[in-house]
Length: 372
Image (tube, rainbow, N blue to C red; front, side, top):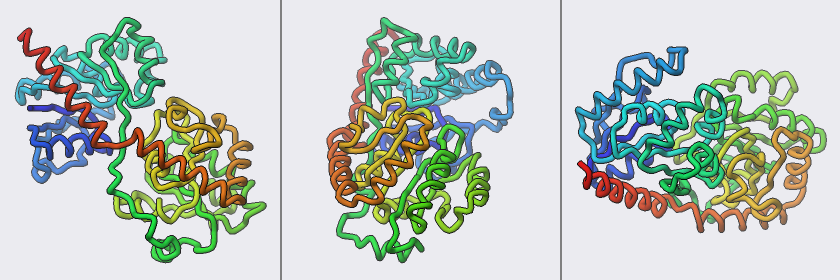
C-alpha cells in the first residue's frame, strides 16, 4: 500500500509511524517542511519544499500554500492513503486539498487549543467534517472533535504506545548508571523529559523546587530536551540559586533516555494541555511515580494516588507538597510505580496499537476504492 504521511518530521510520533509502516513493507512518502530527515538515507520518499513556511505570519495563507504543495505531491506520488498528523497546519492543509482517503491524527493542543480560537476553529471544523476517518490520542480529544462534528461516527481512540524493548531491565544497577551519567548517587533524582516551550510549563517545576530545597538541599532535578524556553528556564535557575540542584542534559538519544529513566526516582510533567504524552508513558513503564498537571486526557491513564498524582494546573503549592511526600516516602514511590507500569502494559503497546491503524488504512482504501 502507498501511504503519504503529512506532518512535522521532527515529531517522534511521525518518525515512529513512518519507520514502522516502512518496515512492514508499505511504500511510504513523507511530506514535511522541516529538514530532519535526509531524503536519500531513510528508505522512503521525502517531499521537502524549499519554502520558509513557518516565517509566514498569516495562518490562512500558510495553510493555502501548504495545501497547494500537498496536492502537487499527491498527484506525483498517487497514494492509496493520506495520513495527516497534527491538525493545526498539516491536517487543515490536507483537508483543503479535498483528496481522499484522508485519515487525520488528532494529538493534543492541535485540537484542544486551536479549535477553540475563532479563526482556526473554522479550519478545524472543515477538516473534521471532510476527513474520511480520525484517530484521537485520548477520549478527551475525541470529545473535542465531536463538538465540531456531533454526528460523526468516523472517529476512534488510539493511544500512542511505546516499544517495551527500548528500556533497561530492572536488574541494571541504578547507582552504576548514576556514576556514568554524573548524577548524585545518594540523592533523590526528579526527571522531566518534555521539550521546552511555554505550554510545557517547566517554570512551575522551578518554583516548586525553590520550596523543596529548603527541606531537601541535596535534591537533584534533571531536565532533558530542548526548545524555545530553555534559556528562560536556565535564567530562572540562576535567579533562584538552584544551579547545584538542576542539571540540563539536552536532547537524549533513545539509549541515553533509557538510562535516565532507570536512574531516576520521580517523574514530573507540567504541560498545560495534553493527552497522555509519550514521555509520561515511558516514565510509568519504568515504574517511576509520575506527577502531572490534571489536563486533557491524563485521567484516562492516571488514577490519583494509585498509579500517579494529578495536580491542579499551575498549583505550585500542591506540586511542592506531593513531591515532598514522594521524596520522603520510598514505599509510596515503589507502590505507585508498580501500578503505573501495569496500566502501560495494558494499554500502551505501540505495536498492537499501530497495527489497529493499519486495519483502518485497509478499510478506508477498500471503501474509497468502491467509488473511484
